[in-house]
Length: 351
Image 1 (cartoon, rainbow, N blue to C red):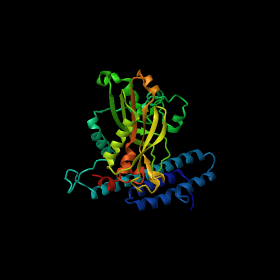
Image 2: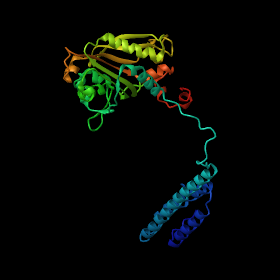
Image 3: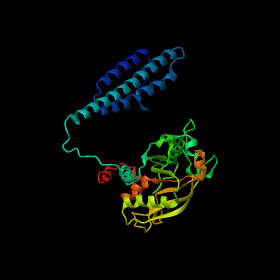
Image 4: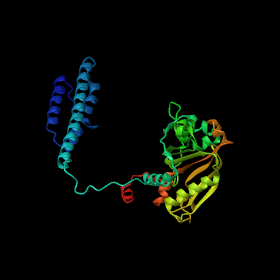
């Protein structure tokens, strides 16, 4: 097309564009207008191409008018596109309007989450033993999460847990055992410092885990600590067996395997036969037929000494049960992530 770059023609084009923009009522009209004005072959591009043929003394004036035209076109198209989106949304809302003040035809009831079911059942199982329930912070200091539990800096156990740290140097607790440290430090708050100390705590823990069928970066644990003269490993094994049998039934198989934890000695890990594969081997149990559901042991003498308790006079045991895994085994979830997926098709059938 021939290019007329006279100031009058450029101003006339502005007026022409503004009139065409007013006539746009639909998205299709806007696309045609964009094609005519801002495409590679549109008016604006062609006018700028002709700028090279304008005499040097007239070029500043013409260039300024062309920039004004381009701004008018760009702003107009953007504004009209925004107006069309708003108008379409209003029309959609008008068609989909729901009166939220009207009651549902069948609202239904929610279900208790699998982890909450497990926590409630364990609480009931332990009620006759006289344990006190305590909540602890999820954002901890190194002292409560590691140092006080016989895990000094550069200890390999820290590498195994590969923790999440905040910018302030605090750590997302890697186990609820940090609550045990707080309890022992402030034991005067529990029964005026008298023994026995019997405290339990539920909560979330965090580790930089590679997620698979039996691991998640965030999971739930149940921590229990019992301090009293005369406690032995037999008491620990008996209590954990009682909890598992009461939770799953008397026929559930339980075994204990040797473990290493810096804060307990000796240390054992409770395992149950996998409910998903019935002990035959599957991804949920890593092909072993058994699922480790916690860690436990007699409280290490260095931990007792850290909190001014004489290991020659008192003993204690502690264990952390993975309530996420317990819930997965209770409801036969093949993947631990299923506990946290919030899939209503699954959760509504729990209770």
